[in-house]
Length: 158
Image 1 (spheres, one colour):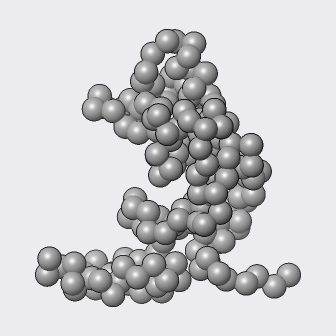
Image 2: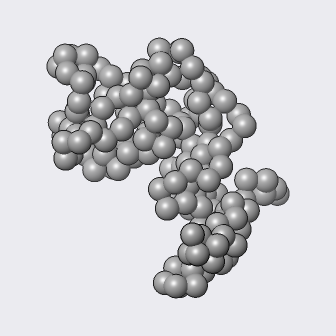
C-alpha cells in the first residue's frame, strides 16, 4: 500500500503516454504504448482458429502454427491484451478464448486501441470495432512506431 501511494504520481495515464517521467527507483522511462487491433493481428487470430479447427484441439503452440516465424509469434501475443487468446497452464501453449471466438464470428466488438504500461491496460479507446472494421496495418517502417509514443489526443500537422 505504501509503495502504491509513492508511485501513484507516476501511474497517471496522461504522464505515461507522454513518456517523460523516469521511475524514481530504477531510472527507467515510464512510457505507455498504444496497441492497435489491425488486420495483421486479425489474420493471426484466424490462423489460430483454423489451426485449432483442423487439429480438433483447444490449445496451440505458436511455433506449430507459424513454423518459428518469430515476428508473427511476438505479434500474436498482443492478442492477449484484447482477451482474444490466453496462456494455458502448460508452458508454451495458448488457447483461443470465448471472447476471441465471438469476436471472430462477429458476435461482439472490441476497442480499436489500447494503451499498455508494464503489460497492463491503462486506457482503452472509445472506438469499438468488429472483425470487419479493422484497419490495415499502418506500422510498416520503424519510423511509424514513433506514433506509439504520442498522447492519444496529440494533433499531427501535415
